[in-house]
Length: 266
Image (cartoon, rainbow, N blue to C red; front, side, top):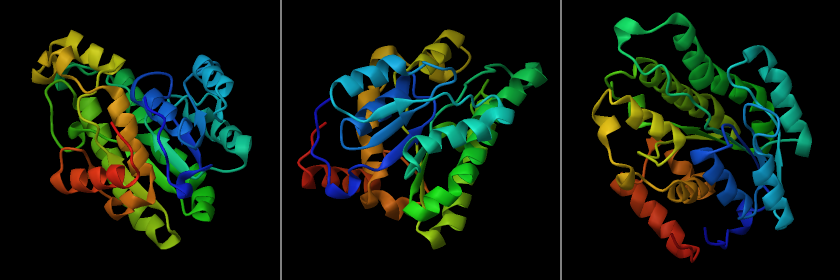
């Protein structure tokens, strides 16, 4: 990942990322930390992100880690408050943490598994926005919700994932609707099929056409990190309330123009 020259208005903003131990969350966190953000990495357990944070701090970047277990709603407020206390506020909340399970037909879904997907993919991200709301108002901040084509398309075997991501898509719109008057923006980032541990589970399931996509055809998560860097900038604010991806012609043109104007490279 190149060291990028980031605009002054991005420097020293504080970002909280869920599900930052691996995959998309890790790549986004690394990109932001290496480019002027103070990043709070959160995983499910204590020390999930310790190695990442230690490496970044050794190189002079500002990063910390704290656990946020999205599956445990009873502790979510306390864990969020602890995260916010580290640097006193948050400017950008990135709701990345998610589960793909249960991967099964609608007929065979078990209540316990479905409830976990609802907690992790929908309820916890929604509550995190609520718990960070007053800080986001003060910062005129931003929420980035990691969405998916599954947010708007039914996919065989993904009943829980599609329905909970669709619900988060609506929360993204609701955040824009209620936050715009305070200067809060909310972007739904649809990264496409990225090479992550979750994609490994999808391929192993063999349940639908998505599971047949070859590993070599998946998107490198570092590319998603760079796209998220743009989404975090004020340049992307015009897309607040929308779900966007690099595949959209208008979005891609705006994104590439921003990269070129900042002398950034992929």
